[in-house]
Length: 506
Image (cartoon, rainbow, N blue to C red; front, side, top):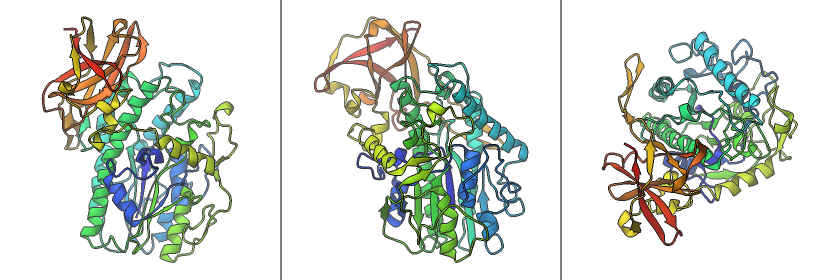
């Protein structure tokens, strides 16, 4: 089994100790208990139409313009196993021949071209704005409605993939678009009403502001928590058909995404590359039931050679990767190719990155990702200086008179189900809160979001516009039906905070 997620950095999965965060990602953690986790694994390219073929062929891609098709890549894991294995294939971009991976799972040529163009525009906009403070270029895939429906349609493929897993001699292979933005999913699989990517689309060469980057990471993190449930469904299905113990399971990603303030999300700099190049890689070998954490120099081009050795088939073409079963690399350098038009000052590495330095940076960032909260699953909602207050009761703190100045609420409370066409619907949950504050709220206002007397989220503000600062957060799904939302300005020290209720303009 080979599952490739999209735009999924290793850092997303890590707790402060550099291990899998089992509170947020219980299914990944359960898999890691039975598998070898290559924590130092990296992709060879940050573009999907280059990195996915590299995984499926074991070869370093040579041309940025090459299409991810069987005509361009005639030899792959699919042709290697196609004569002796049944195929359960769900692909966004794939080099699998249509004779082996037919519809309805694969995209039509026009859909593939449309998605490739969308991603190309995304990268082109980053190149144009690499040194800009802001930009009007909107690279999100349409507005919120289009983005939600597109992601729901893509997500339906994961259900088809899981249903197609059986106990026979089958290559189950999936390239799933999640957790790539458009960020729409809550951890339970409902769709958020967030319009973050419409108002502040993923569009510039740099995030610009730490709080803006933190909002983006929060959206990404909650969508990644949803795909943890997809991994759980895969494990459950394998166990249901009696195939889990004997199965070779490989889960990885095509590339990552960076949320470092002031850095581009995919253009690679010394600061962004630890989150762009380092991707999850889990290999559960047949009959393996003891988890191993390996920091050896692994790359996504090692997937095909590893599969070939396990199943005992010779690869009839030259590969650039190695089998992780029997080979290791002596050097720490990793192949990581720049875009053809990557600005030189944004890619100081040539065609390799230092694996040891990158992993150390990754583990260092993991130590400062979250504050501690009473319930560990509340940590994604604890942003800003007062994040540790999440889970506390308002009555536990000093509450002063409400502010005289009013704030503005801009969030859309509409929660009509998302109709993705073809009978596909997905429930929407009003988990998004947004608005703006004036200058009289102080130089660096910190906010508490309260439902039924409990602080369920905290945040700062970002991007001053016309004298008003923007606030935004997603709320826990299990809290939003417990009562109306109240907001408070948090002042004072962390050990003696003061709350003042925020009122809104009518």
